[in-house]
Length: 530
Image (cartoon, rainbow, N blue to C red; front, side):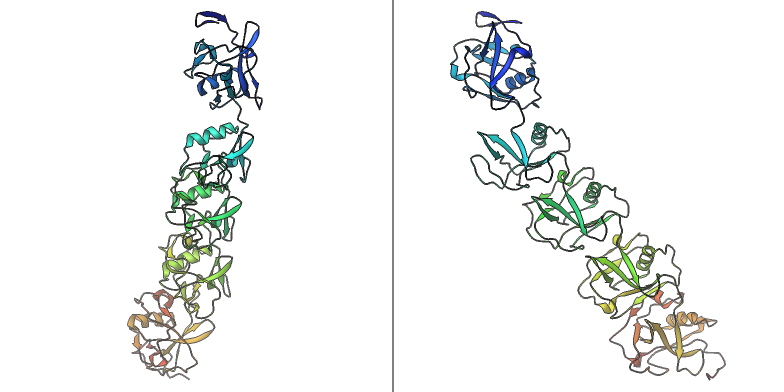
């Protein structure tokens, strides 16, 4: 094409084969030269900027991702030919350098223009993969870091990742030395070194949960695992974490606060996460990320359970009856009976495979039998949950709970064993209950006629509604070695078992002078025992 340079008309060959870069330190950098009238000529750097540099790189067929760098002052030498232009101004939309506004005048040989098209002068180091790590650039023969600010905009991240040959819309970055501190220009230590995660794959893991999909949430940073604080953690954050682990959350999935799966070590790397739920990686979520977290405070480490399973077992003589034990921190612990009721029993039995427990199913307390940690107290199930992890409660249990309050269940509904002793007839006497291998009495605190009705029904007497309740060891006190197994019966008279009456199991405040008794047939003709 022909164009005017000053008052002189020149014929310039403008195909890619008639523009070149020379004397660069890489194949894609150097002094810009144009072939005209049988010779190569450098061009003046006046007005030569990044827009012009991008056009040059495009003419050379170099995929420079729109971030070519323009150099002035003959950085790559001045060459041997005369400078062909004195000023050049491009809009950036041109595809050919000669479509830009060009003028000719005097220009010093010391002002030859140069470009850097290639992206080989950027690298990622100290990351867990070859697509993540601390950003370093080569400058003056030395690799150094980029000092970031408190935030790093998405456009800068995507540009740098494209320089590395990775075009991922989900790429994200850090401006907090996430991948360790390097050296910035001029060779300064910085806590704000920029890092990239171009493949949007933050290494995470769940540990101490008993399954691959449950446990304390940990993130890998700079070669070390750290935890995530549970403050602000919600179902949207849970959704992102489980997706990263290859599973979609279900109605059974849940998360636990207060270090339920144990307290981690090292740094708390994130807290107050604000995921929307659609992110492919936790690194794309807002929140307070290291170092804007509380170092070493692991009391609020969050735990995640993607499959909704808390390993639980029954420690007893059958698969339906025994001490309830829950896996926690790699060991089985017990459940405290505080506020435990029939709705909690329904959920516990459901976890054990009893979807529809009989009305005669019951629970009670086994004093002093359990071992290990008391995992949960104050369970508050509504009866429809698939597991106790979805119920309210205190995890781990409050310190006021002891193994004297451990929950024991009977999901099969085997009838309770109750007997009457020391009465003058076979339908009256002191009430004794068979509990954990031995007979014990019941304290008369709150004992009334509806409680007596239920006891007589359990014993199979006709017309249990006629029962009479007796307090204060009416039929004599049991011997001192006999345990007092329960108190505070709250029957309404319709229950099939005493366990359905939500009693308090064991009572250190009662004595055998308070043993209860019943008369199941007060108007019957006496039948002398023996």
